[in-house]
Amino acid sequence: MGRKRVNVVKLKGEEREELNQYLRKGKSSARSQTRARILLLSDEGREDDEIVDTLKVSKSTVSRIRKRYCEGGLDFALSEKPRSGAPKRIDSRVEAKLTLLACSDPPEGRSRWTMKLLADRLVELGAVDSISHMSVQRLLKKMKLSLG
Image (cartoon, rainbow, N blue to C red; front, side, top):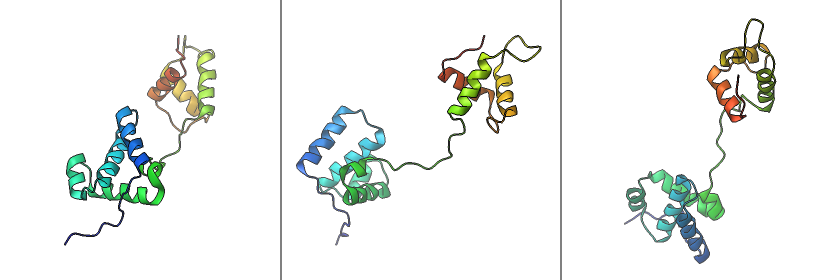
């Protein structure tokens, strides 16, 4: 005797069509598309093991997506929860200081700023605790600034 499924997915006609269009467009992330496929296969009555084998996802992923659909509907099941993570260390304030530095005259005895000099000066000024010269280079590129 099989186990009774707790979170049974029964899509409405318009939800099924929305998911099929969502997959046809292909403009969403691979994760979101996998979630849509899980919901469609679940709606067809496929067992968890079959969905796992077909989509190459874990059983917990299948049950989590089903649960999210049952708790909050289609949009909730397809979307991702915000991820925790370290707050950005480089904000607009740091970018502004870097811009001012890069556009200012270089230090005494230098003909121009280098990435290393800019990184060291940002630390000296207390704009950041630490920053690599490569991060400075990426920031300058992002801001479309060049040295020299």
